[in-house]
Image 1 (cartoon, rainbow, N blue to C red):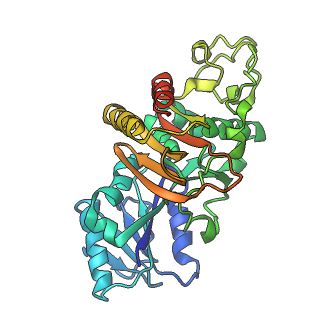
Image 2: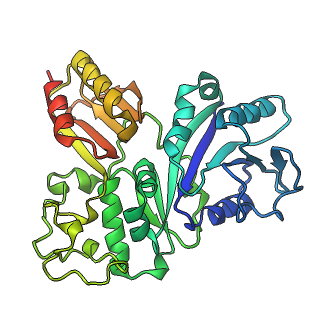
Length: 362
């Protein structure tokens, strides 16, 4: 039985600790091992911990275990798995909390790259907590915050009660542009039911391509170009740091790049669709080359492909340079064999990718 693992990431002050405490104290009959990237000031309270020792792994009063990463994540995961096998520790799943501005990519890659880890653990999903109050500023100023959004399988928005409905709408619109795969949920102070946190299977190679269905309809790419006058709420971000208001005509530099959406974030997504089948050899060569060059900038990519030579769907996904594919279920008798892929990354060359994919079709 593989042990499911969840990566919890999020902006500073977004409520990761609150969420963790809730997960730990809720009586859910599951024993959880929490791996913390650092024991900061406001991390797990000592009152939930049995003893404050120099031990790396601390047993909690509710039977969960908590552990600080002293060496690298691999070592910590191996240690936990070994103790569980020997019956020294009892836990059902692992939650890894990353520090406020960590890149979840390398953490996720640990589960794919390392055979020993892959034999014990199954990466379930990456959860990103976004603090609605400070999101616009953090997304503008910190690429790490934008990356965390791009990696997410599920986005939780906290502190929404501190912003206006327009600001919240603008934020959700912006997050959707960066990551159309991740469902967004507005939560209060990290109060989320456990069903919304665990067993989301965001990393499973399954036939369900989790993209917002509206995003895939053809007018999906917000073809309703925000008119010259930028009256879409996503432009009403709180530019408190610019003292002037945007004039009606949006002459603010962030709007002058000829792009129709706000703050042209460097983390973007795009979708490729085609009814023509892929040539497996061509596609493999092309994706191999792309991942080689752009891997560090490719956050998440996923697809359900129609491949020449098989009646099964081919499911593929990747994180950074690591890519995997799998044969899924058969295409149904009346089902349109449509390949769909979504790419989320930092300044990826959309035209090169689209062209290359087009050229990999039969």
